[in-house]
Length: 480
Image (cartoon, rainbow, N blue to C red; front, side, top):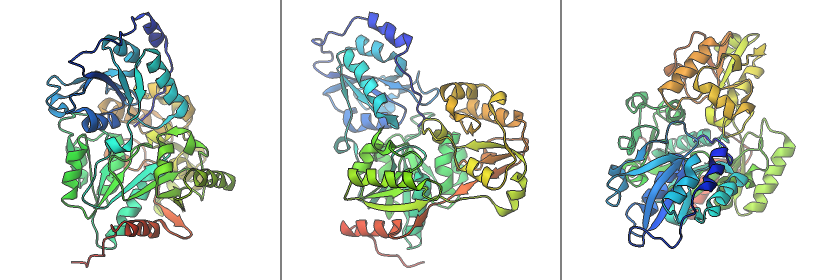
């Protein structure tokens, strides 16, 4: 999920001319009018869990931000339940005040992630100034319960290293003959009814489900390792399908959101490249407080002072958690080093890490510098179409190119930008093979990374201990 900060714009300020809602008016026979602020993920899940068949509430609308093109749609009647035969409209978040006034909204539920605490309270202040309640739903009302052991992988910010941590866990239990099935935080950017339950087991499935680049970045690393991952919209249905073939369920979180499934072992990744963010971003701060294990990742590339600051912070926040240190060493295939050394390089990075994750560099930049690139080529003079809008929202991206691709238009713009850029080679720090998605006129070298535990205890040791404490550690299976 990609965050676009929108302050109180002139359009939202002009909403002050609207009549304030009359709080004494109650529509639909005393049902409370609710608006859900979201970004095509947590918002739909919160609706499904608390509001879908609840006759005490009337959800009048969703608002959308972060993801281009998700407003102007509706949450369809086929997913809404019997109380919403016409579906529920999805509006831009810029319409927030107007919607509160128009629908006499009494409760506004904030339902997206990776925002600063200041950003969150700015939204709360806007809502409350119009007389509505501003609320956040907690775990008790929004988490599903599984019949299988559950491990959740969360983070304090986007780009901390959830993906490589999840892959590490899959391999750990696979070596013991146990099948881990991953469930990914939602990324429903297409037909929501078709995306109700999605199962990915091969690269062909990525094509079948018409995955965006952002979806591929999460699913492809599993399927190329012969692992299975589910995603979609209805997580009750998704979980029940995954349970049919899993020994262990792995929740692979999105952004810094909380898990949709109650975990027997909860892990949160913290990033010493962004010290202090562990207690200033929502809901990553919540994850630090609730986790069994806190992984300080990237210790091989971070300053020792920052590592110690993060360790001190999370220890004070959650003294009962076990702290594990890890690195995510970045590698380039030895046969491809000569393609980069001494050359003019365009660096393409994971989009969310650069945009709402706020990182100034990623794996691609580290790899390009490490193997001796002569120059990092600035893509900004060559930007095409929607990528110009991305850089307008996130000017701090600088000389890197985020792999944006929420739809066909953005993919085409990314392809055109890469092809137009005057460089010798592309170094890609995204988790996928970009060549599966775009046709480029220059060679592409991949920078890849996996989790490496530093010292003792290792992450796998602590996971086993936590599952054993709850009677959920499964015995090793014999190879067939």
